[in-house]
Length: 462
Image (cartoon, rainbow, N blue to C red; front, side):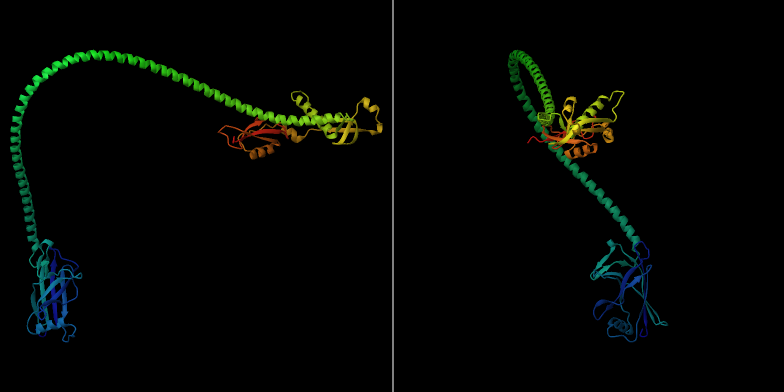
């Protein structure tokens, strides 16, 4: 064997179902007799479709670092055959798992080739793996899958037998327990029978005593019946008295409710009357203010009339008086077939300066006799309808209740009206401070431009 240049490793690996194993990673180890231990000879080898075929070269010159190949070559040169085995690749340093150890050695002298054939091996199931001192055998050269099936069948039969045995043992245990229980129950029943006989004797004695007690109870029952009849009579009387009290109480509650309703209506009427009185009082106050102004104007007019010029009036008052008369006449003609058109007046007056501006002295026949004719002027007054005022005469008073003073002023300004604001305290919880709750003229009343509107706004009591 000195001239061998290659070693060819062969092998077939199947699973326990006799199917080829794919992508199974292994390593071939060589037994180093110098070290008395197994050492790795190859890198990772893979079983593809259950087959392994690896060719290892044995060079003539081997570096000092590759001592394993050197030792293999020396064994071959000495005429021996090294010991080889296949192990599963172990990267996690777990327990060594041996795949194949039995080999068939062949030599091809022409090719200078040593053939190491591991034959066909089958991976064992986990429960059939054999542990040895230096690892675990996880494969076998004997087809173990048929034996595994027989073993599995045997194990199932064994488990079924074990289950039947456990069931029989449980039934036997239950039977023994029942026998023991029945024996105990028999002893208990015997003791109870003796006790019952004693109780029967005692009950006979007590029965005689009970008969005497029943007679006494019958006597007491007759007395109790008489007392019950008396008590029932008292209950009937008390029930009648209670019914009368309930009726009286119901009548009293009805009268109280009626009185409360009357008081409530009276309070509501008083509240309504107070509100009306408050509104009327506000209107009275406003009218009083206007009356004071009119009285002041009247006093001024009287004072002027008491002077030495009883017929002299301010030109503005003369014109205003004539316009008021014209307006009054126009209102009186609203339902007539006629209407007032342009009005022209020619007046004979004296003209002079007075305390209120231009003063017009109105002349009658008697006063004109003593006045120089050169001092008398002809005054012509023309009164024509104001188109804007005529249009506004047909307008209706808007509803301004519930608005604030700012909103009221803005709305009245659009209608050409003036605001007379009055703040008045109120107890109405539905109103908030500054909210209007009374107005004069009322909503939908006829209005004219420049008319004054009295509005009452809510004011807190405190």
